[in-house]
Length: 320
Image (tube, rainbow, N blue to C red; front, side, top):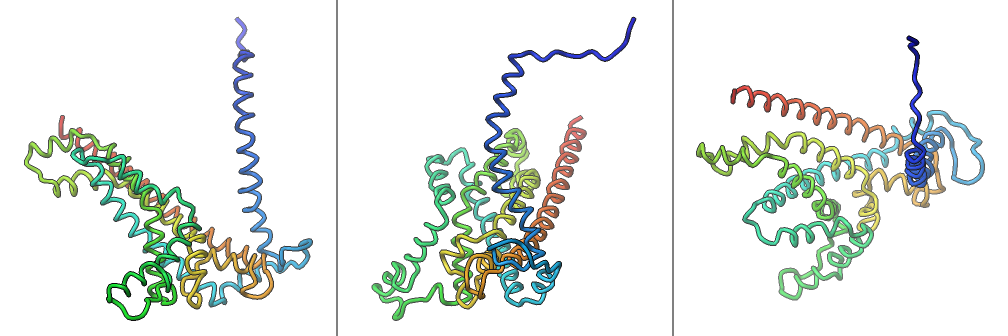
């Protein structure tokens, strides 16, 4: 008896099926390589050059751009603003979307599909349109000031976008309002994964709504919460379009975030001539910071998932 490797013949129909699958994947793969991976790799290359974006790369400066950024007060100002916006918008978005999800998950709630659609509309609306809309609403001659003046609440228009603190607050509120809908969907998906039997058993034992929320809902939502925090923080730190259309970093750079800082150095003339290498180094710093944040929340998600499995096993052991 001869023992050897046997070759399995691939069915020609199956081979053609796989071939068409790869053909359909190819456009997306090419788009990823050209529009995502290539710019990321080249941004690392550009960061080692003093380059204005035109002509060949000639002036190699090594880590000079990185060292200069560490001494740049405007960079640290944009970094601070990005942190303030990112953490505040994340907290507001996560809390409000969770409360909305709790309401919409109630079986007695009527018209759920209508409310979900209304809350989700800002998500699919282009950020630049939202920025222009809120600029018109809260501008000096906007609807809000005209309304408040007409009813006699104020004598002079409120300068929403010219006050440093008020402009940041408005930016956080608008950014959260735009993304609440999608985070609410994540919460709803997590809430609907919780077995209804747990709530029914808790009701039989005499548990009220708040006790079930604290003892059942929140503990079982820990893995979902970690994932939501990961996605929301990462997205909030990458804010650009809203800042550009709402405040353009003003007043006096008080709402300027890292991505707007990068844009102004790479494509605009706010800081003199274009410095693509300098902007690329700032982008690398931002990418590394987001990576650290993502790893941290990814670790939280893994820890929450393992804790959830332990609690389920403990519950099964108690039933036995």
